[in-house]
Image (cartoon, rainbow, N blue to C red):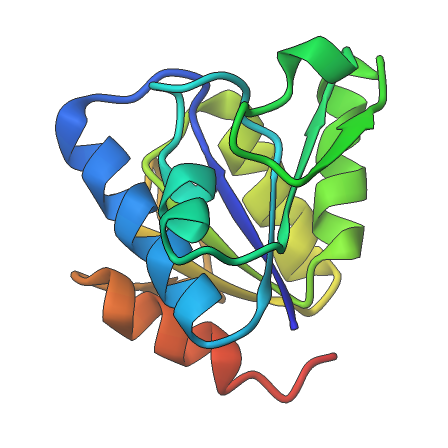
Length: 148
């Protein structure tokens, strides 16, 4: 599976650690992680994935140099927030970790497309998304998805 991990451009230590663990779990279970966050400190999912020595993290950003430094595949879209649609359509399921307006748009697009959305510390609640307390629960929910 390709699992999108989405969240705000900036995060605190708690959200970073949650994202880091999500990345580890996705890698441990042999799935591909897709994100749109750039640089270290903005989302730990790619770093968590790399810690497992897993090649399978793709990052979409405006410019290639802006992609997460731990990403294996760097996708330069130069599309601003329009890249949210690319992330959603490239993902079989998504996990949001915190978030802001961009995350809200990704969640809405994913739900409209019938994809599973697991959320940790969501910025809003929307019908169809599932809120979880732990990264393990969120990843398990996405992996159990029959939507491919």
